[in-house]
Amino acid sequence: MPRISRALAPALALLCCATACGGGEGTTQAATPGNKPAPAAAAPAKPSPTSAPTLPPGKAGAAPLFSHGRRDHGKHIALTFDADMTSDQGPRAARGEHFDNPALIATLRRLKVPATLFMTGRWAEQYPDQARSIGADPLFEVANHSYSHHAFATPCYGLPPVKGGARADVEKAFAAFRRAGVERTVPYFRFPGGCHNPSVLRELGPAKVTAVQWDVISGDAFAKRPGPVADEVLAKARPGSVVVMHCTRSAAPATEAAVRTIVPRLRERGYEFVRVSDLIAGG
Ligand SMILES: [Zn+2]
Image 1 (tube, rainbow, N blue to C red):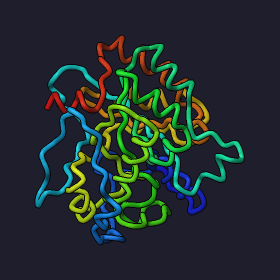
Image 2: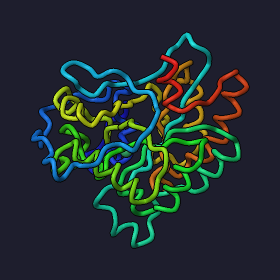
Image 3: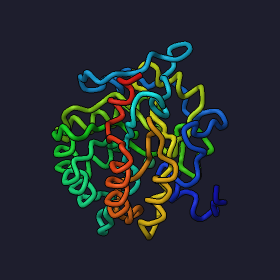
Image 4: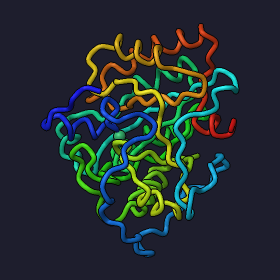
């Protein structure tokens, strides 16, 4: 793993620390701040109705963790894209920074690649038309990447601790999806920066989400050239893999071009692209 400079660390964390985290296990760090349960009035929202499969809860009802599918059940692979925008980045969007990536979505559609989008609630507020369009497309499924993209366990690459409780932040994102008119959300949650610990998994138990990590880090965060991103994915992909990439063109500008290389090469090797829900359904 490259050493992360102090200056770069917060920016990396905004992108799920895809170049920094230790893969599917994420990080288990010091005690989670804000362990108080969310007040009932602030958390009325439940995930939208869905038939998506989930894993059984962990110990004491904790949210279960999923990092990859079965290795012996066909050559299935899930590309996942984190649509990152933090609750603090509105002013940057107002100044013209693009946290979306319409060309990437168009390429996935053109190549008919099913995919799972882990979207922040703030992203859905900024780009409601795109959020709705992605959610209405049977090729895709919209999963939860928190509302704020703040840290759910600290330290987490300089991200500020989530305010108001982890569960409330997750439910706030589902509420933002509903307000944007997003159909077919799935009850999957990806921790910002991948940072989690047993305490926050217990806190998220009542939210009935499956926490989804990854086993292949594409390295697309801040990559300027698509070649190394594609090479990394092609080198690390295995049956059942969950690949983490980003749908945020300002900070992951090479992703769309990398996908154009990755998709045909993996298909040549006999891989079929599926969504996270398909991997979970496969056991
Ligand atoms: Zn992220």
